[in-house]
Image (cartoon, one colour):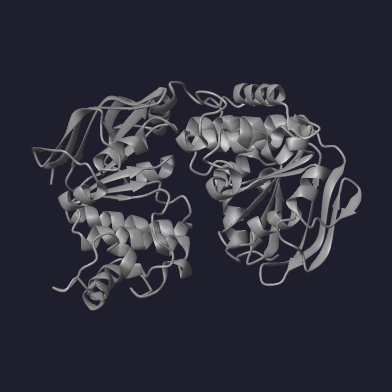
Length: 498
C-alpha cells in the first residue's frame, strides 16, 4: 500500500506577473491521505490542476506508476485514474446526477446514441455505495450543495480512480455531512486509492491525513508525517511566523444602540427574530446551515422583503426595498458567496472596490480615477491584499485576497454597520487572523458588526455577544463565560429552551 502512484518532479508553472509553482516536487502513495496545505495563493490548487490536466506545466515532469506521462486534458487525467473533486462544484444543474457523473464520457450504443439505462444503472451503484438517498435521474439543481458534492465524488467510483484530489471539500458541509464525507475518504483509502486532501481547517487535517506537505509562495516548505507534527509547526511553515493570538476580540467599549430588530418575520424562512446591536459591538450569529442566519442578514440589507416586524436603524424606522437604500443609510453586507454575490471576477480590483459607490468616486457622473486609485492603494495596504495592481482580474487572485477585496469594497464607503456572512470561509490561517484583527479594529473605531459564522471557535473568538438560531428562530443569547462550544451546540441542537 506504499506504492507511489503519482510523482510530480520539479514542476514550474508561471502566470503573468507571478510564479505559481517554483520547482515543486510531490508524490502520492496508494492507501494514504496526503494533505496539501498553504496560504491562499501558495500554489495548492495550481499544483492539483497540473496533475489533473487543467493546466500544463511550463517545466518539470509527471510520472504515473513509474512511467512518465504528459497530461494535456482532464479527460487524459481521468483515463489514468486521476480525478479532481473541485472546490467550486463543476456540475451542470439542468442535467441529472447520472449525466453529470458521466459528463464528457456518456456511454453510447453502436449507433452513437446515449445508453441511459446503462449509465443510470452504473451511477446508481456508485450513489448507493456512498449512502446517497437520491437516485441517478434526479436533476442536480434540485439537490443540496452537500448532495451535489456526492455526485462529484461518485465519479471517482464509476471511473475506478486510483488518485482522488479533494479541494476544500467541506467548505459548505454541516458537521454530519463532513463526517459522512470522511467515511467515504476512509473507504477509498482502504481500497488502496491515493488521496490528496486540500483544506484550511487544521482539525480536519489532523483527523484524516497521514502526511502533510506545506507550500508557501509556490515552493515546498516541508513534508511530514501527521503523527509527528503539530498545528503550531504547520502554521509556522505555512505563514513563516507564529500566530501568537489567532482570534482578536475588540475592547468592549459600546456606544448607543444602532440597530434594533423586533419580531422580524418572513414566512417559511424565519419568524419573530428580535435583537439589537450597539456601536462598537461585535454580535455573532451562529447556527447550522439552513437556520435562517443569511436570510435575516439579507432582509436587513434590503435583498429580501419582510412580511412583518420592525427594523430601527440609527434611530429611524426603516424598511429597505433594495440594497441601494441600505447602502445610502450606512449598512454594508459582505455576502457568504464572494464569487457569485460579492465580486465581478472579470473586472479588476479598482472597479470592484468602487462599483457600489460610484457617486463617491466621480464628479458629475465622470469617474475620478485618481480617487479610485487612492482608495484602492489605501485598502490594499490596510488589508494586505496581494495583487499585481488595480487592474488585475479578480479571477486571478487567491480566495483569501478575493475575500479581503470584498471587505474593502464595503469599508471604503465608511458604513455605520457591517454584516459579515462567513467572512473567512475558504481562507487560509494567516488571512483569517488578519481578518479577525480587522474586525476588532472596526469595532474599536465605533462600527457595529454582525458576524455570521459556522465555525464555533471563530464566532466565540471575535464576538462580544452571540445569538444562536435554529429552524428560523432565535434560540439563545450568550455573553462572557457563557459563550462556550457546549452551550452553542446545545442551543442549535434543540437541547436548551429558547
